Image (tube, rainbow, N blue to C red; front, side, top):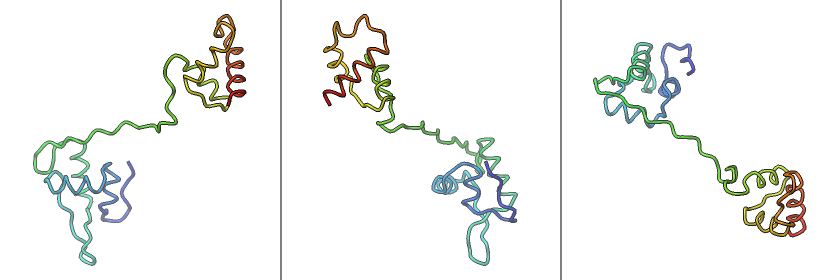
Length: 143
């Protein structure tokens, strides 16, 4: 977490970055009484937090007890999702598909199965690098 600015007051955006919440979530929790209400800057009426309020908010996050005495249970972080194109193939020919991809050839399991079917004995008895080479060449000829 980053430290608040050197100013005497901290904005809502800075406080949210400090405690690891979005502004929307912070305001919802503030409305529920979990976080204290901010002070108002008299010159522009913007919400600000002094060092005591910042410490109180940090204590709420750390101790998980809100300003109103209610328990504060943070939302779980979402697991990082990967786009469909970056997911690793799974199944029978996963290693072969990955090897072909590293050679710049995108192939499906069905295409690999078909190419293996055209090899003598389905590639049985051949070493892995030779199978990769022959399947690669077969798919290049066909596609």
